[in-house]
Length: 219
Image 1 (cartoon, one colour):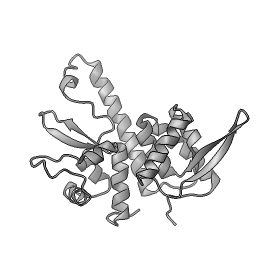
Image 2 (cartoon, rainbow, N blue to C red):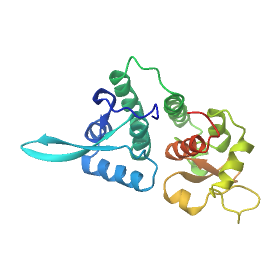
Image 3 (tube, helix red, strand yellow):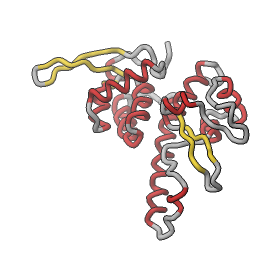
Image 4 (cartoon, rainbow, N blue to C red):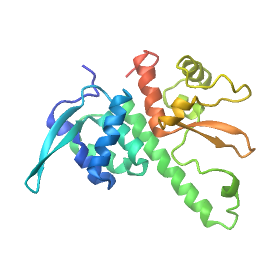
């Protein structure tokens, strides 16, 4: 059994709880989860449950830790810390797995980037942001590779095999349109004005999942 999939009630989080933590409508959260299931990004073991509200019965999803973090990364990355805090309450006795630690590190680094950008915006020389796009929650291939202890060359070679990059672009790497449409990556501009392929948090989670599935890295 996959150690990331927990079936005991106290180690599952409901879609309604995610909606409350992320301050989103529950029906919107349910739709995001359905889209991620259709795209085979979430684990197939997701269960459905129901709850009562004002005399009416409604459906909800039960998600393990990995799936809840992937959902929040797609839904509202800024609320990932709230979900991590909630998981710490739910399973204070269980040490995090390597994949869970990767998600927590992504969140911690994201918060640091946000703080640095707020400080930069507070200074007079804010002209920088007129031509360089905000990179909050975006990672380049080298940063993603470092998190799973691979070289950027090895990671990019693996992603080439997954048809992530477009072969029509010769001097730099650009994502295929399907990768961008799924919210896994974006193209941003470097300080020198060159385009650069950047992974979203959902894209990083997708890459890690594919690396594990292919046996390139351990769970």
